[in-house]
Length: 170
Image 1: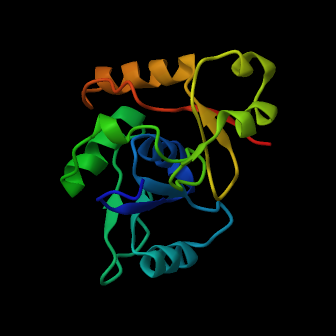
Image 2: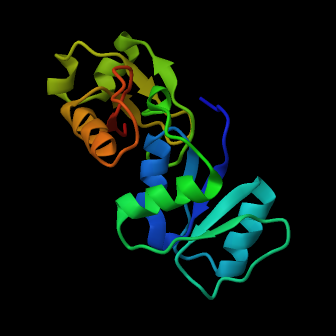
Protein backbone atom coordinates (compact mmCIF):
# COMPACT_ATOMS: atom_id res chain seq x y z
CA UNK A 1 0.00 0.00 0.00
CA UNK A 2 1.73 3.14 -1.10
CA UNK A 3 -0.96 5.45 0.32
CA UNK A 4 -0.54 9.07 1.29
CA UNK A 5 2.05 10.28 3.68
CA UNK A 6 5.77 10.67 3.96
CA UNK A 7 8.49 8.07 3.66
CA UNK A 8 11.05 7.82 6.43
CA UNK A 9 14.71 6.97 6.88
CA UNK A 10 15.58 6.36 10.54
CA UNK A 11 19.16 6.52 11.78
CA UNK A 12 20.72 3.44 13.36
CA UNK A 13 19.52 4.44 16.84
CA UNK A 14 15.89 4.43 15.68
CA UNK A 15 15.51 1.04 14.00
CA UNK A 16 12.65 0.04 16.30
CA UNK A 17 10.83 3.27 15.49
CA UNK A 18 11.22 2.54 11.75
CA UNK A 19 9.74 -0.96 12.22
CA UNK A 20 6.71 0.38 14.10
CA UNK A 21 6.14 3.14 11.53
CA UNK A 22 6.17 0.40 8.87
CA UNK A 23 3.74 -1.69 10.92
CA UNK A 24 1.49 1.38 11.03
CA UNK A 25 1.53 1.57 7.23
CA UNK A 26 4.22 4.12 6.41
CA UNK A 27 7.20 3.54 4.16
CA UNK A 28 9.93 3.58 6.79
CA UNK A 29 13.36 2.02 6.65
CA UNK A 30 16.17 1.78 9.18
CA UNK A 31 19.52 3.12 8.10
CA UNK A 32 22.58 0.98 7.56
CA UNK A 33 24.50 1.39 10.83
CA UNK A 34 27.77 1.56 8.86
CA UNK A 35 26.63 4.60 6.85
CA UNK A 36 27.98 8.03 7.72
CA UNK A 37 25.70 10.94 8.55
CA UNK A 38 26.45 12.49 5.16
CA UNK A 39 25.56 9.25 3.37
CA UNK A 40 22.30 9.03 5.31
CA UNK A 41 21.38 12.63 4.57
CA UNK A 42 22.18 12.12 0.88
CA UNK A 43 20.03 8.98 0.76
CA UNK A 44 17.11 10.65 2.53
CA UNK A 45 17.33 13.59 0.13
CA UNK A 46 17.68 11.40 -2.98
CA UNK A 47 14.70 9.22 -1.96
CA UNK A 48 12.55 12.10 -0.70
CA UNK A 49 12.41 10.68 2.82
CA UNK A 50 12.00 12.42 6.16
CA UNK A 51 15.20 11.79 8.12
CA UNK A 52 14.59 10.65 11.71
CA UNK A 53 17.49 11.01 14.12
CA UNK A 54 18.31 11.35 17.81
CA UNK A 55 21.73 12.81 17.00
CA UNK A 56 21.75 16.57 17.58
CA UNK A 57 25.02 16.84 15.64
CA UNK A 58 23.41 15.85 12.33
CA UNK A 59 23.24 19.10 10.34
CA UNK A 60 20.12 20.59 8.79
CA UNK A 61 20.09 20.26 5.01
CA UNK A 62 18.15 22.63 2.76
CA UNK A 63 15.16 20.89 1.23
CA UNK A 64 15.35 17.86 3.54
CA UNK A 65 12.84 17.37 6.34
CA UNK A 66 14.57 16.18 9.51
CA UNK A 67 12.87 15.24 12.76
CA UNK A 68 15.07 15.32 15.84
CA UNK A 69 13.50 12.61 18.00
CA UNK A 70 13.67 13.59 21.63
CA UNK A 71 12.59 10.59 23.70
CA UNK A 72 14.28 7.21 24.10
CA UNK A 73 10.78 5.66 24.59
CA UNK A 74 9.07 4.17 21.53
CA UNK A 75 5.57 5.38 22.42
CA UNK A 76 6.79 8.98 22.79
CA UNK A 77 8.85 8.70 19.59
CA UNK A 78 5.80 7.61 17.57
CA UNK A 79 3.67 10.38 19.06
CA UNK A 80 6.34 12.99 18.37
CA UNK A 81 6.94 11.97 14.75
CA UNK A 82 3.25 11.77 13.91
CA UNK A 83 2.55 15.02 15.75
CA UNK A 84 5.46 16.93 14.21
CA UNK A 85 4.35 15.90 10.72
CA UNK A 86 0.60 16.26 11.33
CA UNK A 87 -0.08 12.58 10.62
CA UNK A 88 -2.96 10.54 11.97
CA UNK A 89 -2.75 6.82 12.62
CA UNK A 90 -5.03 4.87 10.28
CA UNK A 91 -5.73 1.33 11.53
CA UNK A 92 -6.84 0.33 8.02
CA UNK A 93 -3.19 0.74 6.92
CA UNK A 94 -1.68 -1.25 9.77
CA UNK A 95 0.28 -4.38 8.81
CA UNK A 96 0.34 -3.54 5.09
CA UNK A 97 4.12 -2.99 4.91
CA UNK A 98 7.15 -5.09 5.64
CA UNK A 99 8.43 -4.45 9.16
CA UNK A 100 12.02 -4.97 8.01
CA UNK A 101 12.32 -2.97 4.78
CA UNK A 102 9.12 -0.91 4.61
CA UNK A 103 7.97 -2.19 1.20
CA UNK A 104 4.26 -2.57 0.52
CA UNK A 105 3.15 -6.18 0.98
CA UNK A 106 1.51 -8.16 -1.82
CA UNK A 107 -1.13 -10.84 -1.41
CA UNK A 108 0.29 -14.37 -1.57
CA UNK A 109 -1.95 -17.32 -2.45
CA UNK A 110 -2.28 -19.80 0.40
CA UNK A 111 -0.90 -22.66 -1.73
CA UNK A 112 2.26 -20.67 -2.43
CA UNK A 113 2.65 -19.60 1.21
CA UNK A 114 2.25 -22.96 2.96
CA UNK A 115 5.68 -24.37 2.03
CA UNK A 116 7.28 -21.11 3.26
CA UNK A 117 5.81 -20.92 6.77
CA UNK A 118 6.27 -22.93 9.98
CA UNK A 119 4.13 -26.08 10.39
CA UNK A 120 1.82 -24.59 13.06
CA UNK A 121 1.07 -21.60 10.83
CA UNK A 122 -0.11 -23.95 8.08
CA UNK A 123 -2.99 -24.93 10.37
CA UNK A 124 -4.22 -21.34 10.80
CA UNK A 125 -7.18 -20.01 8.86
CA UNK A 126 -5.40 -16.88 7.66
CA UNK A 127 -4.41 -15.08 4.51
CA UNK A 128 -0.80 -14.41 3.59
CA UNK A 129 1.21 -11.55 2.13
CA UNK A 130 4.77 -11.35 0.93
CA UNK A 131 7.30 -8.57 0.77
CA UNK A 132 8.38 -8.13 -2.85
CA UNK A 133 11.76 -6.75 -1.72
CA UNK A 134 13.08 -8.99 1.07
CA UNK A 135 10.69 -11.92 0.38
CA UNK A 136 9.42 -12.28 3.98
CA UNK A 137 6.01 -13.90 4.31
CA UNK A 138 3.44 -12.38 6.68
CA UNK A 139 0.26 -13.77 8.26
CA UNK A 140 -2.17 -12.97 11.05
CA UNK A 141 -0.78 -14.31 14.33
CA UNK A 142 -1.29 -13.68 18.03
CA UNK A 143 1.53 -11.13 18.03
CA UNK A 144 -0.54 -9.00 15.62
CA UNK A 145 -3.32 -8.75 18.16
CA UNK A 146 -0.79 -7.80 20.85
CA UNK A 147 0.64 -5.08 18.59
CA UNK A 148 -2.87 -3.74 17.86
CA UNK A 149 -3.62 -3.64 21.58
CA UNK A 150 -0.37 -1.82 22.28
CA UNK A 151 -1.09 0.76 19.55
CA UNK A 152 -4.62 1.25 20.89
CA UNK A 153 -3.28 1.61 24.45
CA UNK A 154 -0.89 4.28 23.16
CA UNK A 155 -3.84 6.15 21.68
CA UNK A 156 -3.31 5.39 17.99
CA UNK A 157 -6.86 4.42 17.06
CA UNK A 158 -9.24 1.53 17.08
CA UNK A 159 -8.10 -1.97 16.36
CA UNK A 160 -8.38 -3.05 12.75
CA UNK A 161 -9.44 -6.62 11.94
CA UNK A 162 -7.75 -6.68 8.54
CA UNK A 163 -4.02 -6.90 9.05
CA UNK A 164 -1.22 -9.37 8.68
CA UNK A 165 1.75 -9.48 10.90
CA UNK A 166 3.44 -12.86 11.31
CA UNK A 167 6.63 -13.18 9.37
CA UNK A 168 8.88 -15.81 7.90
CA UNK A 169 11.88 -15.45 5.68
CA UNK A 170 12.35 -18.35 3.27
